[in-house]
Image (cartoon, rainbow, N blue to C red; front, side):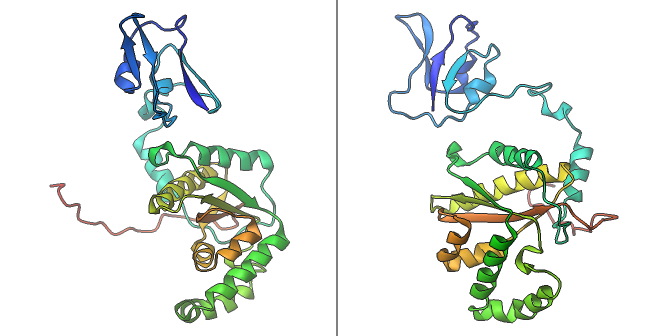
Length: 267
């Protein structure tokens, strides 16, 4: 995976790459711009590829660039009012149809996960999906067992789990047909931020496809307390985030209120 250099047959010497990344410089002897990464500093962020009007940056092993109408003017793709309504419409769903989501639709959600930004473009995250009911039930039981070992969780959730158990076969996941995991081998706190951003991308993408989602903090806490639980889902990462996904059976008629907050510095 690397940036290889410049296709000089396509390059028009606009010099934009020089202002995009310090790894591009003008070689006086060759009298042309070159890509020079002797210390392997490039993190493959792709800014040079995105900014080149001639598509003259050569690269390999990092996927394909994506070009579409108004890519350079995203404000023309959708309005603020539209995106604001879409964000306000996002709900945590805990009632699902038993129908599984087709693989081509699931792939679109994963495509959105892959497009999310990460710190330093590290992209160390891995994705896993559980769709087998028996596996989901096994994980459900392990999560409940682990949480009820903790006094705080037992007091707060013990009775709730009993009630949910009367309604759902796998109450931790509200019988969602799919459980998606985003994990990373890195142990830094920044990874939890990366994972949070990635899951948000996936949840919003799922909403456009008529799907409902919900972040699953219970499983995340249980896996933090007892990493052995990760083995049930074949999760190897040190940091992990989880969300459930499926076709919702609930309908909403308005977005709930959100109390305004004072914005310091915005007078």
